[in-house]
Every structure is written in C-alpha cells, then in structure tokens.
Image 1 (spheres, rainbow, N blue to C red):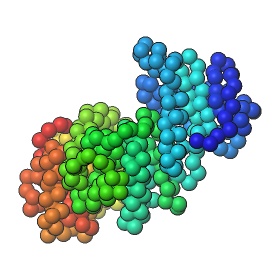
Image 2: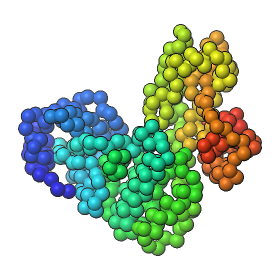
Image 3: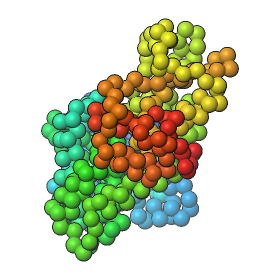
Image 4: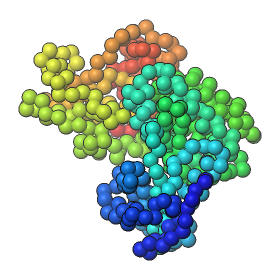
Length: 402
C-alpha cells in the first residue's frame, strides 16, 4: 500500500503515520478521541471518529481485556496485523479503507483510516431506499459477485466477510473493504473457508431466490477455479442458509432482551393522542410508521389494527421480530400500544396480494421456514406480492427458539 508514513514518538506512543498528519495537534486529538463515547465497541476494541481539517477519520483502538491477550498485543499488535492485511488486499487491486497511520503503546494499538468520500455502509444502503429499485440491487449483487470471485481467485481469505465490513459507492459501482482483521493469503480453499466467503450472500437471502443464489455461486466457482472441491452450488447455498439460521438463533436471546427494553436500534417511542406507541424500525434504521399515520389509521377504524390482551400482543410482537431476523416474509406488526389492559397492534399494509402463488417459490419459502425452525400450518394460506411469498403471522408455528 503506497504511503508516505514516517515513524515518530508522542506521549509514549510509537506512530507510523502520514507525514501530513503530524502537525497541528492531530495525534493529540486522536488520543483525546478515546475519551469519547465510541461509535462501535466490544471487549477488545473501540471505534471512534474525529474531524480534522475538514476530513473525517476513524480510529480503531485495540485494548485487550485478558492477561494473555494483553501480553500477546505487546509483541503482535493487532493494528499492525490489520494494516498488513489491508496491504494483501491492496496488492491484488481490491479497494480498501485509506490507511492514515497506526500506533502502538505497550499492549494498546490504534489504526487510523480516512473517510472514503461517496462510499456508504453496504448493509445500510442495501436495506434503504438507496437501492430500492431492482436495477440498482442487481448492479450491487453483480459487483459483490465480482469482488468475491476476485478474492477467492487470489486465494485471499476473510474470516468475517459480511455486509457490515464493506462500503459501496453506487455512483462508481465500487466496493471497498473497510475491516481487514484476519485477512490472509492461503494455499487453497477448503469447504468451510469457501462457505465463509460466500455467506455474504446469506445476508441478502430475503431478496434473492435460490435459483439466483445458486447461479451466482456457480459463476464464482467457475471464474475463481477453486481446485479440489466437488461441491455443487445448491449444496453450498443450502449450507449457507443453515449457517445463517444458526447464527440468527445464537443472537436471538440478546436481541429479544433489547426489543423488550425498547432498544433504539430496533424501536422508536412516539406519543400519539396521549398514548405511548412503540414503533419498529426498518433494517436500514428508518421508522416503519409515524405519528400522523398512526392517528389516521385509528380514526379510520382500520382492519390493520388488532386489539388483543397485552401478553398475546407481546408474543406476536416478538415473534414478528424473530421472523424478520430470519428473513421470513410475513405481515408485520409495525406499532404496539398497551392501554387499559389491552394491547393494540398496527400491521403493515401489503398491496397487490395474489393467492395463486408460484409453486417453485412457495416450495422455496417453505424450505427456508423449515431451515429457520418455523412450520407453516396451512400452506394454502400463503400469498404473493410482487413475486415475493408472504404468510400471516398466525399461520406460522415456531418449532425452536423464542
């Protein structure tokens, strides 16, 4: 990776950093940024952002919690390892985050990257209006397929390759890898490593049919010429769906507690006519419904409102989120209000319903429900809307989890 890094020491830190950033208090601002509330955090690292001379920088601060990890970090700093991983990608012509520098102090380390102008979080852009039309989504899927093919062909393995670790620029149709932790060159791909790389398509399983997924996996296998693996695209895709289901179940209890505690990641609290409503957020983070819409729906005595006992309303509310995380399409309750010992649910409106559904798509829907641990009580009650299979939530029985 081409850079003009120089090595300096400041306040106990040893920095390898761009020459243009060593003046005007940049490093002091970087160290002060760690006192702020991080934008992302776990037990081993925090991520902060900082503005400097009209540019936005991201600071990944590694700080191991266990004794063994702290000891290892003194000799094998994670920021240096990630910097070297970015180099592996860069050398193969793969767009990455712009590295501004990295620093080490005892068992701590920091990696500094510059904002990529015009690039947007791939997960947010996929689930937002920015890629709401079919043409834009297909272009993104094509670009994603090309990137995965390129990485596998170059024998580059990313152990945590998902939408949250890449950015996308829809105007120049380019993907950038912004988290290279663990990226390495390997001698050859085995089944598990191949599935790890292909699982990025599992994240968009709600918007991709089995036939399309298998075709794209087939294209990747063909273009990347992975040797010694006699695996069919169908076998790989089914394994990806199973892996996604297992991972979703692993996270469900944590998410369930967050939903019940009205975590702002999933829930908005709004007041309408003196009553508190909980409204769900879309995966993109935008609200599903606003105050005006709730007011209008109540005034019309709409069929979209169901009045239940509070416990039943809560169970349906949780069940719907559970289904959504598994990407099982259903008529979702998008707002919930408890008042006078009753629970009111407002459901989304689905237009263009068709009871006569494509048999192949219905079989696919039933199979995905089964993999995720759900049973459709009456398959004849399923319907399609814009060539997507939906089911009413009361027609879905949970066979595991929740």
